[in-house]
Amino acid sequence: MAERMSGLADDRALLGRTSTAERVADILRSRIAEGFFPPGTRLSEDSIGGALGVSRNTLREAFRLLTHERLLVHELNRGVFVRVLTVEDVEDIYRTRRLVECAVVRGLGEPPYALDGLAGAVAEGRRAAREGDWKAVGTANIHFHQELVALASGERTAELMRRVFAELRLAFHAVDEPQRLHEPYIARNV
Image (cartoon, rainbow, N blue to C red; front, top):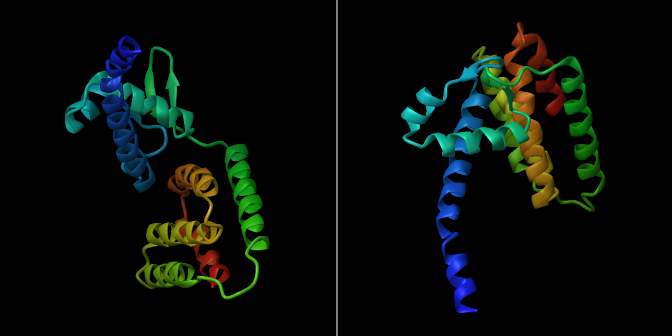
């Protein structure tokens, strides 16, 4: 038994690398969501690895995680790119969001409901619209839907929708007229 545990202890180093790769994936996911790396951008291993101070293997694992989440694509002999969504992708994202959010609302039970987060997201969207910051209105809309899903208090639901919302951000970055997309949702979210 001690011999087997010794072998298991040798795997301890894998935990650190995995968690580092997950942290790198978190950073890159946030940067993609912010538009720092727009859809279609080739991600340079050397530049990103150097900037973050991580090994090529760690970065490749982070890329693999984000590819699994459908935020990146790997093209053989070309590299890793931020995914460009198709019309079908966007339709599927909105269909998924509608299915999950409607189920959340149907499952709420009796009032009172904790609506402070939703109200805060609506106020955030209104404030951004007054300032003409349509990217921020899109962010507020995502926050509204995150708060709606949070009403379900389900870890799996939150994780699923975190990925859906990250993909949705890719679509937002490809919109030529963000005001036209986001403005109708301000009143709808109220």
